[in-house]
Length: 220
Ligand code: DCP
Image (cartoon, rainbow, N blue to C red; front, side, top):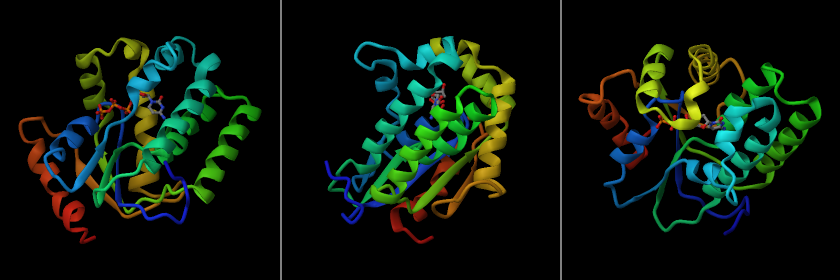
């Protein structure tokens, strides 16, 4: 694995959006293209870090585990950004950017990270941005309303997420909006394509198809 900033990287697309916005379904839609290296979010690693379910621990006791969890997220996301591929296009579920700008930010707002822990995460993030090959070329924002994703989350019934409230999803939604839609907080690393991800799964593939030219022909 190379993390040289100067090494060539494929045209890199990151898919962002609230919990339950359909990022995994979006990725599946693009699995059929031979030119694309599709990298799903490493959630299974977060569930099993040498036998520890960090995602479960996080939701059991946020104050105790926020730093540990986000430290590991940063590492696994760095691995995804720098993973080598022969394919000309890389499509990633989430990124080191949403980890910092959405989730770490929310933890800071909620007082779940001590100032010292937040500083360590920020130092690491700033180093990665400066020296590692984590550039992106396009951001796909799956825009949803919090009520829709709350219902989806309840339906899929992921064991670790039982304690996730509508209020939490509303706050995360607002952060995604401010970052990718209004562009009023943080820098945006690439052009943003906004999709209506509230649509039902019976018609969502038509919405996803709108991205195909930008991703496959890179015409943005
Ligand atoms: N998570 C977190 N911090 C991060 C990334 C994710 O706390 N930096 C948590 C939030 C969710 C779980 O991990 O409980 C997975 O969230 P995602 O939104 O990344 O993935 P989903 O599986 O919800 O995506 P989708 O339903 O859109 O396919």
